[in-house]
Length: 104
Image 1 (cartoon, rainbow, N blue to C red):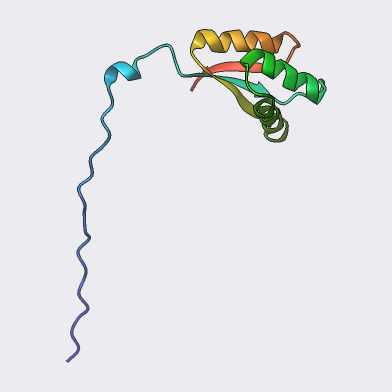
Image 2 (cartoon, helix red, strand yellow):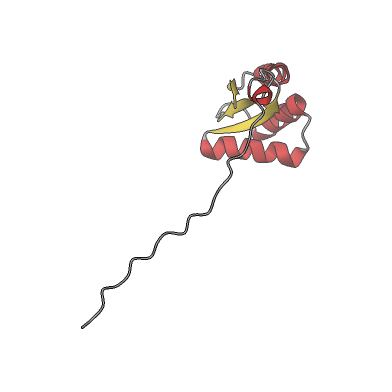
Protein backbone atom coordinates (compact mmCIF):
# COMPACT_ATOMS: atom_id res chain seq x y z
CA UNK A 1 0.00 0.00 0.00
CA UNK A 2 1.48 3.41 -1.00
CA UNK A 3 2.41 5.71 1.81
CA UNK A 4 1.14 9.25 1.90
CA UNK A 5 3.70 11.87 1.02
CA UNK A 6 4.96 13.65 4.09
CA UNK A 7 4.64 17.37 4.52
CA UNK A 8 7.91 19.06 5.25
CA UNK A 9 7.93 21.41 8.17
CA UNK A 10 9.18 24.88 7.25
CA UNK A 11 12.56 25.72 8.61
CA UNK A 12 12.29 28.97 10.49
CA UNK A 13 15.50 30.75 11.29
CA UNK A 14 15.44 33.34 13.99
CA UNK A 15 15.95 36.82 12.64
CA UNK A 16 16.97 39.89 14.48
CA UNK A 17 15.49 43.15 13.35
CA UNK A 18 17.87 46.08 13.04
CA UNK A 19 17.87 48.38 16.02
CA UNK A 20 17.53 52.08 15.35
CA UNK A 21 18.56 54.80 17.69
CA UNK A 22 15.48 56.97 18.22
CA UNK A 23 17.63 60.07 18.36
CA UNK A 24 18.75 59.44 14.79
CA UNK A 25 15.17 59.14 13.57
CA UNK A 26 14.13 62.47 15.03
CA UNK A 27 16.90 64.51 13.46
CA UNK A 28 15.37 67.45 11.65
CA UNK A 29 18.59 68.25 9.82
CA UNK A 30 18.32 65.62 7.16
CA UNK A 31 18.45 63.96 4.93
CA UNK A 32 16.88 66.31 2.44
CA UNK A 33 17.12 66.21 -1.34
CA UNK A 34 16.96 68.72 -4.16
CA UNK A 35 14.94 67.34 -7.06
CA UNK A 36 15.72 68.77 -10.48
CA UNK A 37 12.99 68.51 -13.10
CA UNK A 38 13.46 68.20 -16.86
CA UNK A 39 13.99 71.50 -18.64
CA UNK A 40 13.41 72.03 -22.36
CA UNK A 41 14.32 75.73 -22.36
CA UNK A 42 18.01 75.74 -21.38
CA UNK A 43 21.02 74.38 -23.23
CA UNK A 44 22.56 71.20 -21.87
CA UNK A 45 25.88 72.87 -21.04
CA UNK A 46 24.06 75.68 -19.21
CA UNK A 47 22.20 73.21 -16.98
CA UNK A 48 25.36 71.19 -16.27
CA UNK A 49 27.26 74.37 -15.42
CA UNK A 50 24.54 75.51 -13.01
CA UNK A 51 24.40 72.09 -11.31
CA UNK A 52 28.15 72.23 -10.86
CA UNK A 53 27.89 75.75 -9.43
CA UNK A 54 25.11 74.70 -7.02
CA UNK A 55 26.59 71.43 -5.82
CA UNK A 56 30.34 71.58 -6.35
CA UNK A 57 30.23 68.12 -7.94
CA UNK A 58 32.62 66.95 -10.66
CA UNK A 59 31.63 67.65 -14.27
CA UNK A 60 30.87 63.99 -15.02
CA UNK A 61 28.51 63.68 -12.07
CA UNK A 62 26.68 66.86 -13.11
CA UNK A 63 26.25 65.48 -16.63
CA UNK A 64 24.79 62.27 -15.17
CA UNK A 65 22.32 64.29 -13.06
CA UNK A 66 21.28 66.35 -16.07
CA UNK A 67 20.85 63.27 -18.27
CA UNK A 68 18.71 61.51 -15.65
CA UNK A 69 16.47 64.56 -15.34
CA UNK A 70 16.24 64.79 -19.13
CA UNK A 71 15.40 61.13 -19.72
CA UNK A 72 13.32 60.33 -16.62
CA UNK A 73 11.73 63.70 -16.03
CA UNK A 74 13.47 64.35 -12.71
CA UNK A 75 16.65 63.61 -10.82
CA UNK A 76 18.04 63.97 -7.32
CA UNK A 77 20.56 66.74 -7.84
CA UNK A 78 21.80 67.13 -4.28
CA UNK A 79 21.44 65.52 -0.83
CA UNK A 80 22.21 67.11 2.52
CA UNK A 81 20.81 69.16 5.37
CA UNK A 82 17.79 71.38 4.82
CA UNK A 83 19.95 74.49 4.86
CA UNK A 84 22.45 73.19 2.30
CA UNK A 85 19.65 71.88 0.06
CA UNK A 86 17.86 75.22 0.13
CA UNK A 87 21.12 76.93 -0.82
CA UNK A 88 21.68 74.54 -3.75
CA UNK A 89 18.06 74.93 -4.89
CA UNK A 90 18.40 78.71 -4.79
CA UNK A 91 21.46 78.56 -7.06
CA UNK A 92 19.61 76.31 -9.51
CA UNK A 93 16.63 78.68 -9.53
CA UNK A 94 18.91 81.58 -10.54
CA UNK A 95 18.47 80.55 -14.18
CA UNK A 96 14.86 79.49 -13.60
CA UNK A 97 15.39 75.74 -13.43
CA UNK A 98 12.48 73.95 -11.81
CA UNK A 99 13.58 72.38 -8.54
CA UNK A 100 12.00 71.18 -5.32
CA UNK A 101 13.45 70.52 -1.88
CA UNK A 102 11.95 67.60 -0.01
CA UNK A 103 12.68 65.36 2.97
CA UNK A 104 14.14 62.05 1.81
